[in-house]
Amino acid sequence: MSRKQEGSARKRRANSDEIEWKEYPRVAPGEYRGYCYWGKRYRDPGLHRWTCLLRWNLFSGDLLTTLAYCVPLWFSLGEGGKPHASRRGKYLREWVRANGESPGSGNRLSPNVFTRRFAVIEVGDADSPVPYSVVKRIVHWETGIPRHLVSKYTSQDRLDEEPPIIGGSL
Figure 1 (tube, rainbow, N blue to C red):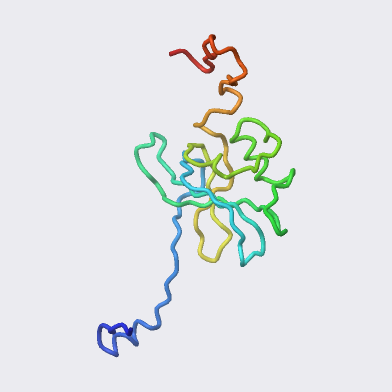
Figure 2: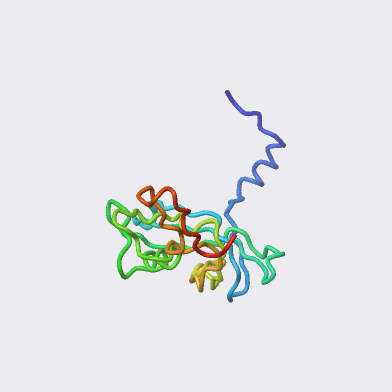
C-alpha cells in the first residue's frame, strides 16, 4: 500500500536536505538535585561493550522547578559476552553506595537500585562536537532506605512475638 505524498514536488525536494538529530538538554555545569527515573543495561553496538544508562531529571534546590529532562549517566559494564561489574569500576562502587551494603551471594546487581530515587549529582558537559549535559558523578543519595535498616524478621522467629520495628516509631 503506497502512501500519498503531501505538498508540491518543489517543497518535497527542499525538505529532502533536512537531517534530523536528537537534541539533548544542556544546563550550566554544577551540582543539582536529580531524580533517577529510568535505568537499563544494554549492549552498545557502536562501542562494542555493555553499558548501563541512567536517565535523570534535574530540579531546582526547592524541587518545585524542573530544570532539565532526560540527562544521561553511563556506566561501562565491559566488552565480554555478558555484562560485568569490575571491582575497580564505577558501577559496582556506585551500586554499593545506592544499595547501602555490599551485594549478597547471587545478587545480579540490577540497575533498579538507582531508580525512583533523588540524589545530589554533579553535571557537566559531554565531550562532543555539540555539547550537552551529562551526569559526571553522584555526590550522595537523598532518598531510599539502605538495606541494613530493613527488619530481618523471618518465619523462623516466634510467631507470638511482634516483629521488631526498625527505623522509627509508629
